[in-house]
Length: 135
Figure 1: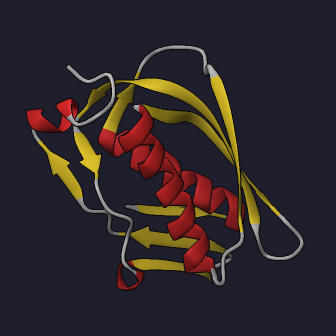
Figure 2 (figure 1 turned 60 degrees about the horizontal axis):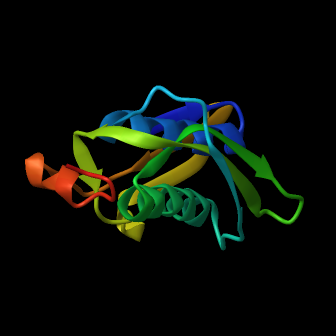
């Protein structure tokens, strides 16, 4: 997955949107729950990895994904992740592992921010049964 944005926070948000769009079809519904998570990364790649981890955890354990996401940067280099959650309608590929450090690039380049992450996925009908509420 790749994302680009003029700002660091929006680049992370775009990466989350790409992960969700590539893996699931959310129910067409008004978000029913907001989740706020504080992330205190040691580096920019850690910020991207920790954020994607939060999405993967919610997908695999709660059967929900963010319909919208906002990443708010803090003055200390950390960030607050605000996710508006919806239930999953269909899973096409279940992200099963947080990207390894070697599989994450997050850098300031060309007047903006660019990120790239390789996320392992599991595809097939058995994926849906592994998600809470799956058939």
